[in-house]
Image 1 (cartoon, rainbow, N blue to C red):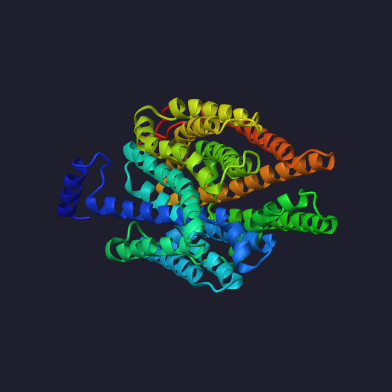
Image 2: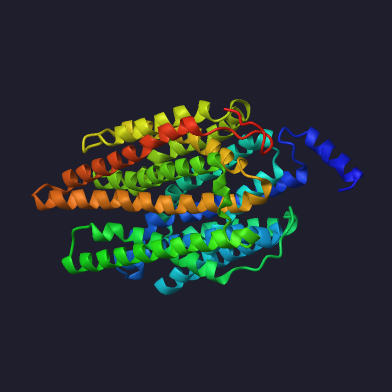
Amino acid sequence: MTAATDSIRISAASTSPTGLTSRETRVIWLLLGAAFVAILNETTMGVAIPHLITDLGITALAAQWLTTAFMLTMAVVIPVTGFLLQRFTTRAVFLTAMSLFSLGTLLAFLSPGFPMLLVARVVQASGTAIMMPLLMTTLMTLVPPHARGRMMGRVSVVISLAPAIGPTVSGILLDTVGWRWIFGLILPIALVALAAGARWMVNLGETSKAPIDVWSVILSAFGFGGLVFGLSQIGGAAHGGDASAEALSTTTLVTSLGIGAIALGLFVWRQLRLQRRDDALLDLRVFRSANFSISIVQMLLVSMSFFGTITLLPIYLQGVLGVSAFATGLIVLPGALVMGLLGPAVGRIYDNYGTRVLLVPGSIISSGVLWFYATLGPATPVWAIAIAQIVLSVGLALSFTPLFTASLGSLPPRQYSHGSAVLATVQQVAGAAGIALMVAILSGVSAGMLADGAVQVDADAAGSQAAFMTAAIVSLPAIIGAFLIRKPADSIGAPMAH
């Protein structure tokens, strides 16, 4: 870098509280916008499943593959992103990801039937999987340590608003113009993001020329894919319906989890060997940082309880209280808006005061609301759930930003891409595990009560209570972890601050 360039950068940084130049700020906003539309798309399909069953003339099991295939693709692609972000330029990775996502969205919009729609979801997921690791890695590379919390707060806005808006928008479109226009709405936004990226995205950092290890890719696909697919079968194995279907689902579950566990063990063994010469697909030396490791465990617990809960809540509202899909979206929307609005403020608090002032109250608040959810029944007023959801969102807002920032900030810059890949993989697998576990408990308890002669509403209420209690129990160790995570110092190797 020349002296003239240095002076330009210093001048630009001096006018920005984040220390970023206008070009770097534009890159981050591009990535935030792309991540928002990708997550928005990911959260619209759940509400659409019943409509797709009717419109496409398919079974519920086939329709569920539109979600399962998406999750599988994410689980396979995300672990590879650590390598991709080191091997290829920022611009190339962004344009590839957005092109895949836009192509998948176009195919979904034009799909004449189920097979093409399933392929479209896989193509979409392959682009979506790259966006969050790319955003996190770029943010950590560009933003100076003293301002990372503030920028991570903006990431929290994306993560919280998109899942809340998704079901609400999806419900409106399903009730008016049909499922196809879910993709019709997302497509122009994706194309604008792609065009903006082609115009303004620049290359950041340096690339490496390390060859990709094919065996690592295969083991990663079978390992993470097997785990996620196996977890997706838990609900079917525990449903208590047709005996032959239940037995088949149980066999599939055990086989998938077994293959996934073995392949994942071999994957870890191979990475430990390859990282000795810096050729690992996913560098596991990130776990040498105790702060990163504790933060990852904390993220696993939060993701399990959070994703399980946001999946259960609509089931409870619609199945037990008889609330419509659109009204369900409106009930959870205020909480998500509060979470999004709190993001930047939480980031500033993190930058100034560290992790414990946020994580400790955040974990206590979140766990407290989950224990309240374990008491929900057929007579619970809707307004009480809306208020509880707002309080839960406050707890999650206090948790996500410090976890993202403290975990990746504990690593040296050369490991940011691998750390981002690990973080995204843990979120994906933990989310799948949380959803599978909660749905299995709900289904099992409900089926057992129905067999004993209970009415459907009471059975579903009891199943929801048991599942919410499981989420509450999972959240308890996170309170302990909140005391252990520290804010990394401004430079790796310096003493950490609390």
